[in-house]
Image 1 (cartoon, one colour):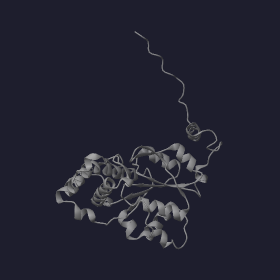
Image 2 (tube, rainbow, N blue to C red):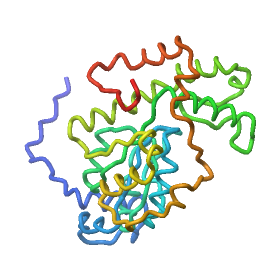
Image 3 (cartoon, helix red, strand yellow):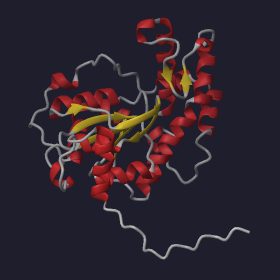
Image 4 (spheres, rainbow, N blue to C red):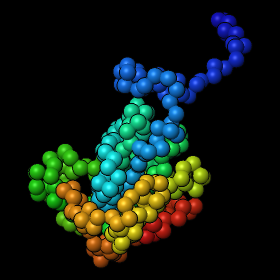
Length: 287
């Protein structure tokens, strides 16, 4: 019988987090991308913050992100690694790179402890944007119908990771398309909400929750609340032209359209997906 190797009596290696950050960034992005020497994250981000808007699709994040970019002068930049259309994790090299410049990032990422640890390290306070789930379902239906009718909006292989738009959707009636979205998309939205709710409830991150209804009920008031939460300076009067702008990839939909469109059975099935999480308050999703 082969003898087992004796256990090491050496003390565990202590890892310098700062040096680890540099090693990862330099290996991934190349020598010289990040300044050598000790980086003071707090000092670096004082005037150029990293702003993360974590949002569900169809929740108005395009409007909010573009508005923040125009008001603050920060650039838009992706701070994540995309494993599929809507599964994101914050990407350390991107964080280190943009920490010097600041940016606004629009992400469909979930609230994982991995992301929470990176947000604490880089002083990121996320803005979480959500919308009533019935309205999201109907808005997704409109989006998929429009994409399959207009090739300029995407090919048959484009869509969302939880509802791939392929040939099979083209023959579906409006009601069947809604059924498919409830079956395939709603579980993703539930997981998104639950992950952020629990992360915030446990104090892992300091976040601001904003609903679609709040954002478009009073745009200026809500944008000011976001800016105050982020500690960003802004002029006394926010240009109303920015708030009224219709961005190329965004159209705001009617509040309450879902309750008027979905059948009673569809609404029952939709809410059933939320019933497994008795510890979570889904009030911001209208549940």
